[in-house]
Image 1: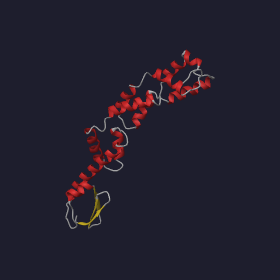
Image 2: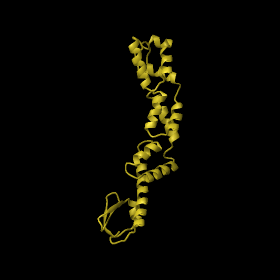
Image 3: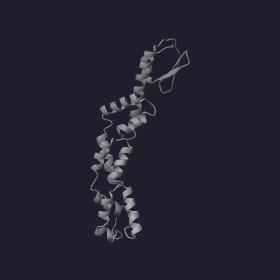
Image 4: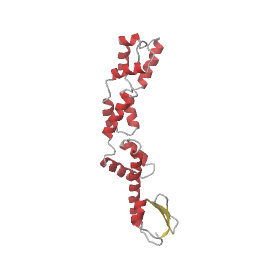
Length: 208
């Protein structure tokens, strides 16, 4: 292709147009290194090479920007990058972020699991589901969710802190069980905790 026009963009990148009407974008550093001029002839291989380098750099720049807001799993970061770049470039960016220590699925998953169980009082099942939704692998999510505190202790804390009504008829009890199950607790643990003496008395007299 022969370069017919160079459009210098505000972000420092360059849009390269050819005489046949096609065009492509180069991120700032790649554009600077290419040092193109109108009238230059580029082979298909040269164009492909420039685009590959440009896209990988663009992906890494986007990854840094995304990670500047909060921690991400490698899967979540890859998913976001692929909205703008190819899977090849996204994989390269994720690998580079891992090399730089900016993503670590194990550490991040354990911290998030502790936050969800400790602050939101979620059971292991819901914690695991949240981790999977955030792009962690099933193995990492399972291990991190397994590190959550004793589920029956967490259930007791949840019942008291959320002031769930403990008195009522069978329908009321069933509704409470469903609420607790929706928070990620196992039926066996729910039944065991609800059958304890402290629950039958209710938390109304406690200063929570």
